[in-house]
Length: 150
Image (cartoon, rainbow, N blue to C red):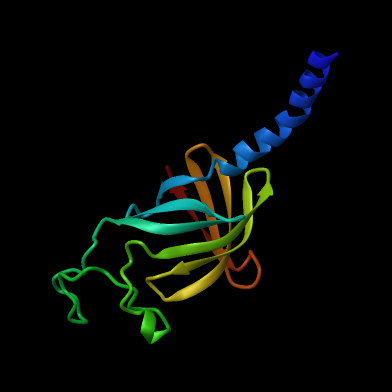
């Protein structure tokens, strides 16, 4: 009888463990579609976030028109002047994504350091090594999807 109860407990817990495994499948390092950066997706409390951990060109080009040639890239397009000196490497650009089931995360925001704009976002893990991140304004129809690879 004791073995039967243990077996039933395991069988009931198995779907929960599988759902948790699915939810955590997105964690790790992803390369952006343009191969210019790598983003680490990590869990922070109950939400998922992403930060820049590598840039193909970590420094501004030598011919930078704003006089920053050769210096490390910073968040210079940020609308808040006090944040414009933040280095891009280490910058958290995604936040607030919650697992919605079926390899989808919703309710987050993504920041584009090239434009200084923040968008709503959601992401879908379409394969083990393929992540679709959709940034949008207002509704998902008004946006763009970018494919990241592991």
